[in-house]
Length: 228
Image 1 (cartoon, one colour):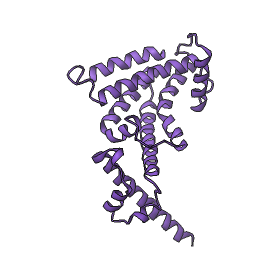
Image 2 (cartoon, rainbow, N blue to C red):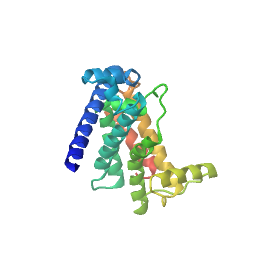
Image 3 (spheres, one colour):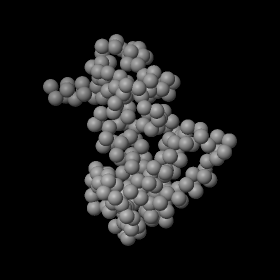
């Protein structure tokens, strides 16, 4: 019996992966709004009722794709920032890895950070995977602070202090001072804003190609975060 269950579980995992792969192809062709369980089933030679046993709704399939994308991006950033070097060097490596991932995985990037999908509300399951992305950058600030290399002299009101505590505790960085948290968040939002503007073509005919501008922006982020 155990061997039979193992084989069944393996087959289910393989088909689940095939379903998600086909869904990613649909994302590339039609965007998240065009994702259809019936179309996925048709491309895989399945009847719709069989696919519903794996993903009962389009939203559940979207959630699986979002969680996967967050985890792949999180792994990418963790790997980029795990090497030796100063906190500034690690931030540069992670920032460049984020930009590269957005260019090489445009449909997944758009699913995570693009226009919200009408009618879709991300469930709680996406929070922890989503937190891995800012967490990669805040951990760099955390390490810098422990080494005495991150500024902590900001004056913050109680609202910002409470928000900083929520962020730090959610990421398991509860000992990080509020000012360091918010400086890192400032730098992180600058980074994502730069990537988003380039990704959506807003630099066309001005800062395109954006390599030099992006490098300059990263140096500004380091100063904002108190790392450079």
